[in-house]
Length: 187
Ligand code: GLN
Image 1 (spheres, rainbow, N blue to C red):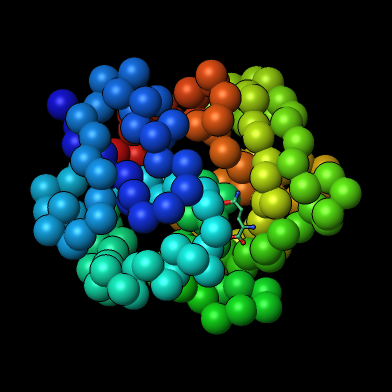
Image 2 (cartoon, rainbow, N blue to C red):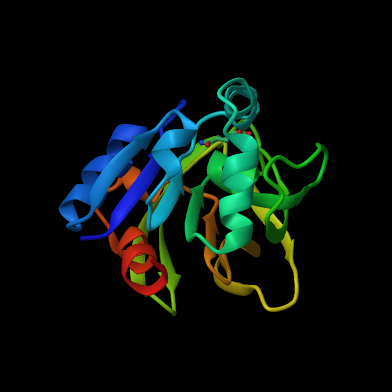
């Protein structure tokens, strides 16, 4: 059975755990660095990236997670989790700085700060439900990074080797195909 950690400092943690359970994974809530030992993969949920960054420092998790990402541990960042993974942010210092993408925060303006769409993701499936909440988007990707989904001209899902990042919250729907792609194709 695959053991997947879910960073549990803040944000949409429970929904990821429920979906991972339903996919047959064993889940570990990660609040301390000892809980990173023995994982097959790690999910970085959405929430508020500046708060999550502070908590990553406070709990001494930033460096250990960065090291694991550099060593090849599969990681999936959703929304704020994508912001944490990005090597570069448009108007901020990066956080973990491991995934070769440039990310802009809050890309959809205030009027439409949350919405749900159905996305076609050729590598995964058609009409995949995606919930965007004050979502970031990927402005550009480095060489070798696969763009997996684009919504209205903006990159919203990409894979850099063992790192997957998306702008939206797949765990807030009943459609588990993106999380399933992570745990079956990447972990
Ligand atoms: N706007 C948030 C941030 O900058 C991300 C929102 C989310 O994770 N739903 O961190």
